[in-house]
Length: 177
Image (cartoon, rainbow, N blue to C red; front, top):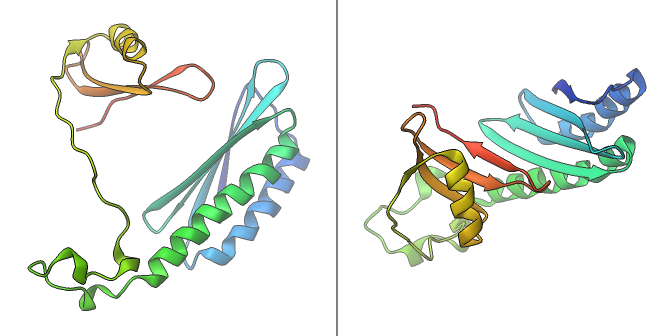
């Protein structure tokens, strides 16, 4: 596994890097090809540390993030989350029927084996999209008491999404097209 470390307001030592590399090598058993892990280390406030690990493998992504008072504890907290996600994904993919054996599109949804069903769209919603600034979108999101808000960014005329992050700040997603 290729491991890349990125630090923000945190100075990782060689010992921590070695521990991260050693513990992430446990995940190698799940990958047949090359996998890449991006490990982000950051300081939150004065006494909290966040570790975010994103693993890319075979066109898929698994991600987990934890915050605690010790970066060494973080690796022990984040690895079980990642391992659970990857194992669940692997089991789901292994239980699927090969694509050649899938029923034709004309057959009903009940003809697909239960292991094939991953989830259904249970609600569809249409709404008018407004052209606003990021600040106005955040204000509207807060007024609606939602976790995210879709809008056209007045600054670049692109469809964007603002969302509430776990740390109480906001995130902005703007697609490249």
